[in-house]
Length: 263
Image 1 (tube, rainbow, N blue to C red):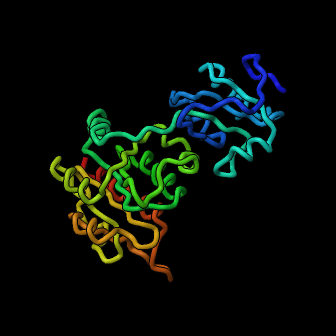
Image 2: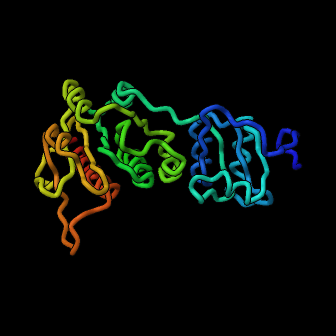
Image 3: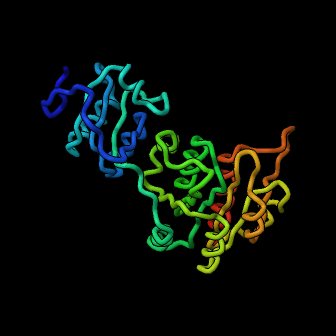
């Protein structure tokens, strides 16, 4: 058995923390440390000594996280994404935020609230990419439903490239009801749909919620009826639809453009 960074032998059989979450990939693990997320331990592929791995090991020692050296086969068995890049961190499961925390984040920044609501997104890669876009576009949080949708998995964390550590994600029972509740707090809602008005012709400033629908069926009828505006993205190609995360990115940055222009 190989001793770990604290001088203890590692058999690979010790119990993991309750509700443990794996964070996989070098960038995701490093961002987790830098965001001060509590990391219990990291598993590092034996023999790896390149720059990113050494940086991760330094961060682990700063935060007194155990370092476990294992072979690649062990990491392959642990991996949920198949792309661990020689390192997996173990942390408590990601905590879902409360809606008030999203409003508090907007208030701290002195900005009108900007939330992204997802209507039954099922692909973890799409969810991770949308969380990454939400962070870069300055959205104050992402809202997902409890049922018929992907949650915060290891694949989501890795695809978000660390953004999950900074962008709060709230889970609600019903997206349509949540829209009604948020309207009572002064928010307006726009959803993406090919049958809507051109996004450039809509006023997307102020307190806004952007609704993105399911990868196959789009925004559900009930949720669409709750929205104040329906936005279409101009398309000039031979196909008539965009990936959900791409559509979220395009519309998010139209909101950014209009917000900048309104200042």
